[in-house]
Image 1 (spheres, one colour):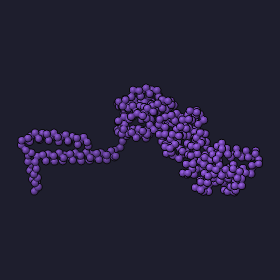
Image 2 (tube, one colour):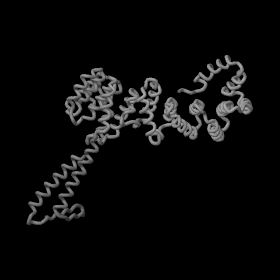
Image 3 (tube, one colour):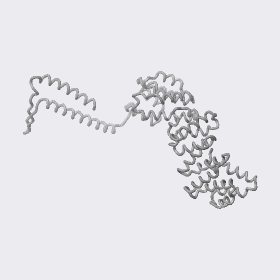
Length: 398
């Protein structure tokens, strides 16, 4: 359509120039049309413009009708030969069939003549075959205009080889690199791809990710996986890595961590529970979570941490229990926790009264049995091993 308009404009300019030269010194001419009592009087210029516009309208209508009937014919037409399909249709069929080898041949055939993408596409398929070094060598020959695409491919290769430092170096460089102008129209898709690669890096190298400049800039799902990896590999962390972890939390506790999903905040809570120096941060996060919504697992994490202090502040614990019990009534775990507070503060009569509550609750039943066995150290120890050491009951996964 744009070509037609450009062509007509060009022809119109030529006609205007020719007519202007011919009419110089003779005026614009005169045209008289008489047809069945219809009379039209005008000059030659008006007639010329009218004829050009009429021709343009006719050409556009013919093109639209041709396209419309062509589509109708294409719908009716049966395909007897794969080669007769449009290249994009061929690619779509191969994608749907997951025909990897044919897909590779098709894509390589399409982009073989592309000076921009040829090496990047070939490197992609070589990586799929495990020929990483050959792919890296080929990427060195790729077009400078396809630099970002080649870098993304390199990062994928380094991640597949578990080459942490090379992957981090290229991720950091690409994250701070100004995007090429031709990629700005798809900047969002490019940014999402880069963020996904950061997520893969964080999952593979959870402690090294702490040192990156892009810490915290992950999708929520990737943050969840990273936090889970930190918990699973916590015992393998060295003191320096734990120090960086604490620093990251203190830096981002009021921004990125505050904006995290509830699931990720609970994972942070479990991490903080393993860091003695972060007990105050742990208590604050747990109390904020419980103020928003009661969660028995979060409550256990908070309560256990309070009791494990060298000098537990039972008055503060009781005040907090009173506040939550008023906000969330008829929850047995508060009576369960209060029993320990009463025992520790030698309010045995109050503790006995608590045992009369919630006769069908397993936590309170445990306390009733524990109270009956208090004079039998052997049985009491066995009960503690059976119950308090069983995470299926207490739901505390530190």
